[in-house]
Image (cartoon, rainbow, N blue to C red; front, side, top):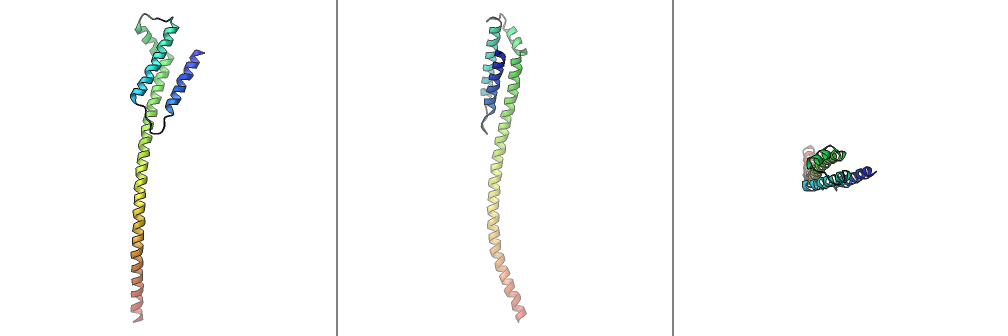
Length: 139
């Protein structure tokens, strides 16, 4: 029962971490701090399960490495790293989209100005051609 509660707590923590706002990135220190805390909690749980003391630290480390919690911590670490990378990619894509939009707006306004200028010049040329075309025919 306590194992299920522990697993739910870890999953809830991961859910909160995975709900970062767009562009928000966890630092390596934040990730390491979270992993250290989870490892400390797992060691405390193991100490309690083994009567509060273990004579050899190596044995505790071996148990931690092979425990389900270690596998969950490793999986969460990978998922957090993916979330962090995706967050960076999303931020870069958003910046690129903003630059592209600004550039296309700039090009669009230049195109409109060019069309207005060309339209004014073109209408003058058409008027001149019409006037010039009528004059020779009338003479």
